[in-house]
Length: 255
Image 1 (tube, one colour):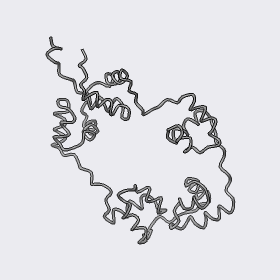
Image 2 (cartoon, helix red, strand yellow):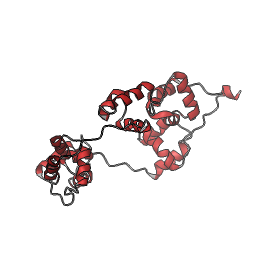
Image 3 (cartoon, helix red, strand yellow):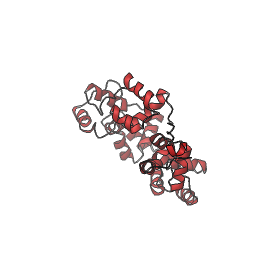
Image 4 (tube, helix red, strand yellow):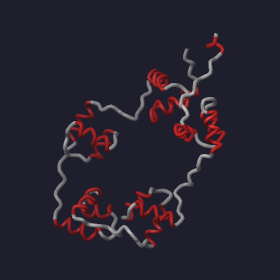
């Protein structure tokens, strides 16, 4: 006999099933994935991780793949660009070939690419090409940008100081025309931390989880150890502890 779902469990199911799936919910509520999936189906809740393509979406993609940008199509269909590209490949669609590079464009690229003061975004705007197109054409022309022993200017350093907490290293690198590694290394040397150092798991915490994970809920373990529930669930597998915790039989069930 399956135990009745509590209001708290249903709340967790409604909150997380669509975005994180059955495995995550089963670990949160301590029920088997099959039971979680059956309950979600009964409540009409669907996992949004993989959304099936509909006929009208395929028709739209076939109609506009040649005359619209992938980003525009993705926006309209509320899908990622990678999803658009994957579906187009499956449908054997080919977009219009990119226009050939003129000698004038190549000369502009040669003049600007080697100077790191010119970010790839600025060069792309100047030539009216995408950032990826700039990078690929630079490889074709065997152009190089200095990456080693880069002397940071005051302006570059100040930009990093102002944005290291709000932007990723990749975004900062793109804005400055540097590599992500160069930005990361300079941030470390300058003592700029993007986030607090990762808190390591102690042997006492590991032992506590091994002894109690099948007995008490994840939220109680998290509160006891001062960690998040996601941290507990994510760490369990590395300890070789079963994610499924059998429920105790009620007096009614025993009878």
